[in-house]
Image (cartoon, rainbow, N blue to C red; front, side, top):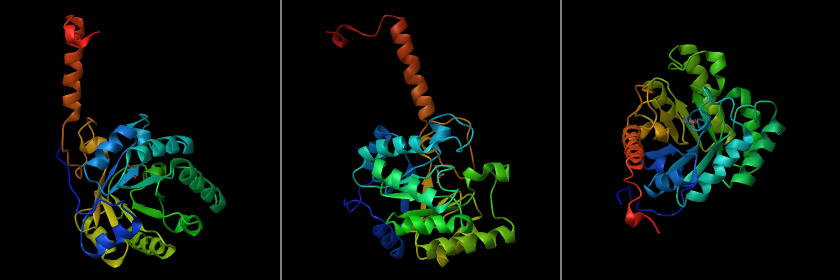
Length: 273
Ligand code: KIV
């Protein structure tokens, strides 16, 4: 079976991601939301699996990431963890589970870790949530930051276009990145920002910086698994590379099954008892 064979089959840790950055080895990261997909993604050699709150869009069909609940993220997290042997598993903290106050954020973080058995959490935001980030890290929970386009704030932006093109927003992003590193985050996701800015942040920080729509000058890349496999139809941002066309493959297979049932071809004699 084809896949990427790493020369190190041990479980990936935050420490190993840090070492990968130090030796210039790029980090591969994809989302997963269920057991079966996570088994395939892990078996193919991915370094990090993100149980993204993009589950709200691609699993539940919501327009934004806002509706997904803490219970639902724990359900997706648990399902993924059961399918993974090697990759580091990070669960997104959903909208409304950490923005209120530090203690609420800590309680949500502890619930996700206790119930999903994930390795780490990801939170969106910089200065505004830094107290919560510190509180969660002080409880021994590894945290990854997320800056740039932050889909949980879509109602503030009003658009999913590229962020931090203007100097003021770019400078705030750089300050926030340093704050998150200073607070003890083990890594940072930068979403949909100019490649030159992302490269600057990756150079200035010692923790790994993972990009999505942030160019090649960062320490690793993340994509939404259903997008890169071509299961989602009609979502075509410039940064997305499709590695398969599962939409077509699945539609053809299902169409063939329907035909076979209707024509009495399925099941045949060998497919029954
Ligand atoms: O929820 C998600 O899938 C994410 C990635 C886009 C980084 O946060």
